Each structure stands twice: as structure tokens, then as C-alpha cells.
Image 1 (spheres, rainbow, N blue to C red):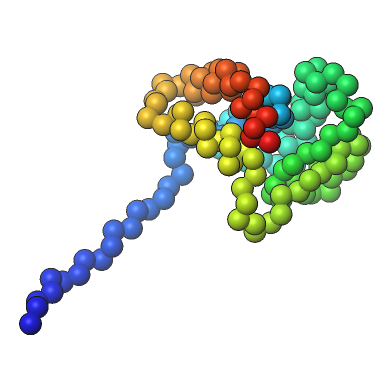
Image 2 (image 1 turned 180 degrees about the vertical axis):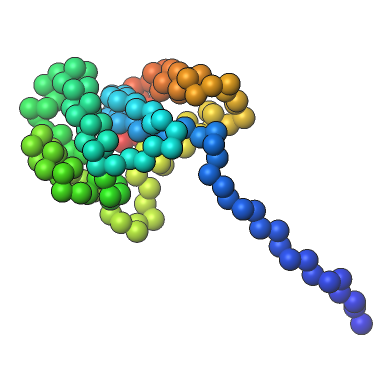
Length: 155
């Protein structure tokens, strides 16, 4: 007969929101980054904030991708509430942009999660930054140093 040692309960790790995290919104296309907006700590993205970001994106497209607005824009974004509320929908319609929604509950990851952020997370791994400004500048520099092929292949 074998004696079994008393089984231990598995250790469960409690997930907490880190106060060390910064949140950023990144819009990019096959040629590179168009807009990076870093959110102040504790900020919730509302439809008003998202609409302001979309207006910033429109200006960036006008400045960085001359003529593209007249060719037509297809925006891929998720189905989070700020993306789908009436005010956002009306704004996007006024821009004349087509929205290619990411299907809800799909196992497929959008290009930002699958490609851009996966590479960024690997690059950030193990680094520490003293201030929010330091991490923001470092991430923006990393985004700028990626070759055009990096973004083209991510799309």
C-alpha cells in the first residue's frame, strides 16, 4: 500500500491592477504609426475621449498620408463601448470612413494585439523606467525605429 502525502491546495495568485502601468492608444497603418496617445493614470476611455482621439487621427492622416482621406479610410477597431456608441458612429460617418469591426467573441486577435503589441511587450520585457515620461519616450522611440516592413507585414 502506498501512502499519499496530504495534497496541498494550489496557490492562487490574486491579480491586481498595477499602479505602474501606462495605457496608450496607438493608431497605425502599413506605413507606420499615425497617432500615439498616452492616457493619464486612472483615465477611462469614454466616447468623448475616443472621439477626440479620432479627430487627432484624422489630422494625422491629413498631415502624414497626403491624399489618403480622399481615397477612403477603413478603420479596424474593436467593439468596446466607446467604439460603438452613437456619437462615435456619427463622427465616423461624418468623416466618410468605413468601419471594419472586429467580430465579438472571436478567437482571432486584431493586428495590434497579435503583432504590434506582442513585439513591443517582448522589447519592454525586463526594462524598468523611473517615470511615466521615460517609458512614454522610450516606447515612442521604439515605434519610430521600426522599419516600414514591420508595419506592412503586421497588416
